[in-house]
Length: 347
Image 1 (cartoon, one colour):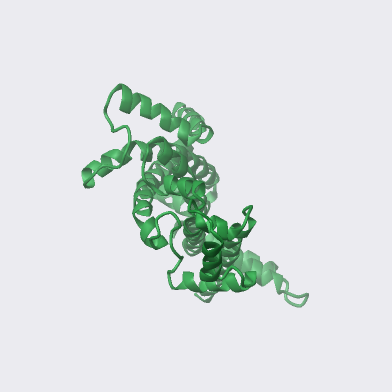
Image 2: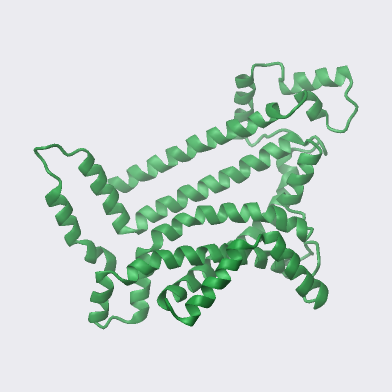
């Protein structure tokens, strides 16, 4: 239990450090942009000397860089990210409706991707060398190779324009209509992400099928479903760890998919904010997406450490061996741990 708490504390510390570093980089984008930051904050308005002076005073642009960064972080801790240059509204209020659309799309695609990716990954691994394995691998190869926007254009032409089964653009009104509008974009994201999960699940499961505990369970006439569940549980560490990468791919893919289907989400908002030099909005969206990806990565790492007994045992053994000296050789400890391996696998 102490090892688990130590690892959680360590991982959360790494998460906080990562967010601070990313916040520093994101805030620095305002100063890396060419030209006067005050003129960028003016946007499309006429930049008079009086207006530029008022903006510099309001945003503290004449202060040292680290002082400005400290003020921005302090505001962020109080959920104050400034006002949008384009609309004059608070950034959070302006971004919230667009973020809701994107999160709905990402949630649907994530759930479908996890279910289909793990399911077909298990089917492929269990049928290694058979026709179903070849078919699943070839389809997943197409999914990982084809860009999401190209898949979006294809399904948009076939299922929306040719057959008229789905709406061509927009988000719709009401739960059912909204879900119907998001069906094709979610399918495009699911196809690409589930293909990646299929490959990861298959690669993680194949070694488990060949291990001794699998033979031991089969010799005891344990049902096939129980054996598969044990194998998936023991292969869960790389599958869970890949969830952070999957979420990053989903958030990145939505930018192009939303443009293809004309969905008013964060993708279109980010593109228009960059076009109109709406720096506070760009900074907030970038920091929010970075926060979500880093948090998801930390959570799945902790879950993988807690769920997978072999991973936790390896980490514990590594830490013990690293502090051993010549008077306390690590050999007996490793041997004792190996004796409990089968028990951990089937527990």
